[in-house]
Length: 221
Image (cartoon, rainbow, N blue to C red):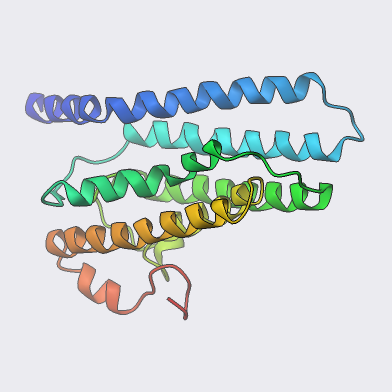
């Protein structure tokens, strides 16, 4: 028992830089949310859309922090530094949007952006609740989840995050934000490849599960 407790403490400490990183994200979102609420008027659709976006994004980031403390210990990990770098790049690609100027967008586009981000964030929270024991940023095998959102696709969390990323992309100047989205998606494809290698090595039942499911979109890919 003491050995397992020690291993869990070490696992949390190893993840502490990421936990701090996401806590900074919480602080930033709360600051933005406070500013938007401060000058919100009931007929201001654009500000209302921003508030909804920030609330759902805040729920998503808080859920990520929570699952760091709920997940199982790793049974296997990807070897080498490249899979780790790819995973970090894939999970943080959206940050590159913020080096770009904001686009001047219409109320309709603002609402579409908010809808995509909110749908992606809410779906991500639901998926993280189901995934919690197996969650990891890096390519690791902690638990094999094959039910709920994982019944038909192997990476529903990345699909949900991709929807949110498309919504965020609309808020920044083109074609650079589209290029960042494509680069982030490419990193996610590589990340999935490394994760599937680790899961396949750790769980014998992963191979038949992989054979009957798609990666991101049922019946398509």
